[in-house]
Image: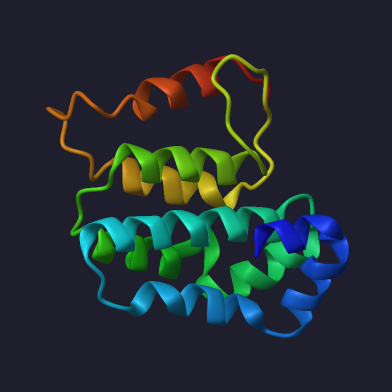
Length: 149
């Protein structure tokens, strides 16, 4: 689906927003899936949402109305799926959503979706401190300290 959206991003952003499709995309996260399929679905949903919200204030506002400030409903769905133990891949996807595209630690980036700051920090709090495989905390620290707000 993302390949089609990228052919004319603004057109599809408007179409999805005006057609109320954000609800349908989010509702995909309500199912019960095995671990591998479920995480692929979650990450695909987040990547698709990132593309549909990228650089579009009207779409971000419409999505905020649907899921709440700080994307509270999305947070609940994500944490329910991950059983309150988010993965590094989830945190990486949220970082990408935060910057309206692929987050790269070595590139200077700017926060472009403020609602994701709250979402990311709330999800990050759920990561067990003894989880060595999650380096997104460090990446977010670098991100915050290397950018001017």
